Image (cartoon, helix red, strand yellow):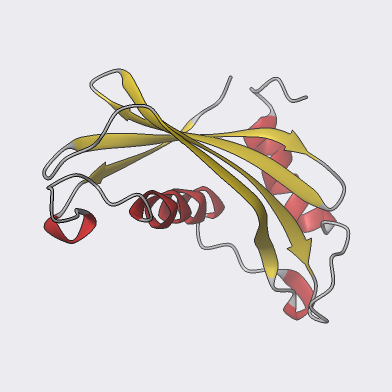
Length: 133
């Protein structure tokens, strides 16, 4: 199964007053990892691209200042107009949090639309080594 790995070091700005990573920062870090998967892709015809529709997080273990983590992103479902991803925050081989998200593809008119073939080709390549539901 192909997994995209995004290394990230926890900075002071990521933590709360107790020195633990603030729960909302996981969303921002996960977004950076998803953008890294896209690799600066531009979308055709002025389309907006992928917009998160649903999001869930399970916190397993806290992360702290200066922790080095890997965000492992796996596409779990690739549909005609949306995709689902699972993102694991891993520190020293241990899963600290799991984020699940569904992103809809949005056209220039801000309405959901079928994922264009040029975009689908990139994801097919990414998925070629994954088992997708």
